[in-house]
Length: 130
Ligand code: HEM
Ligand code: HEM
Image (cartoon, rainbow, N blue to C red):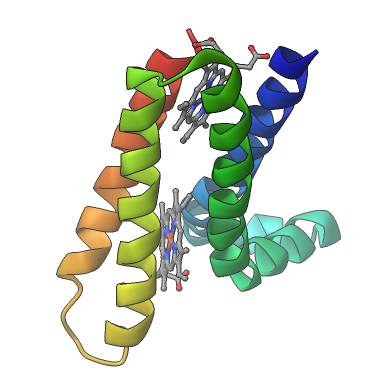
């Protein structure tokens, strides 16, 4: 039972993670196929929602991470792969917050790291779940 509840919160983190990744995917689709896709209300509405709530989705992962960690740590102890994934996620969110503040300036280096960690995080999560 605890396993299932803990797993449920793990899945919540993954769903939010996917929604944050869609910030890239939807913008990419818009750039490539924007002319054709702009007729589709579902696409334009999703694009707006994904971009507008990116920071919220990202921040919420931390709340679910905390719950997942507390449950799994209580019943199973530490998971090394989980700790690595969690470290990446914390770093990513911290970078996102930093980037929000730095965004007005022209320097976009942080964004390259933010994109890179997004992919590295996918690998870390897959290793943890498998
Ligand atoms: C980015 C962070 C994390 C994500 C996305 C994540 C996600 C998940 C998912 C989806 C499951 C499998 C649930 C199932 O199959 O029903 C799981 C299992 C588990 N997680 Fe995490 N988790 C994360 C971090 C952590 C951390 C920090 C710990 C440390 C205690 C941890 C400990 C565990 C344990 C013990 C299990 C069950 C056994 C196992 O499959 O290894 N996880 N996690
Ligand atoms: C799970 C955590 C997160 C992931 C996986 C993630 C992933 C991404 C990705 C892939 C992009 C690139 C989109 C593009 O190329 O335009 C991006 C952009 C960005 N992210 Fe995140 N992010 C996360 C959390 C956050 C958080 C918590 C914040 C701030 C509070 C944030 C702020 C930003 C900003 C400011 C951009 C620049 C583009 C924009 O404003 O949409 N991110 N993120």
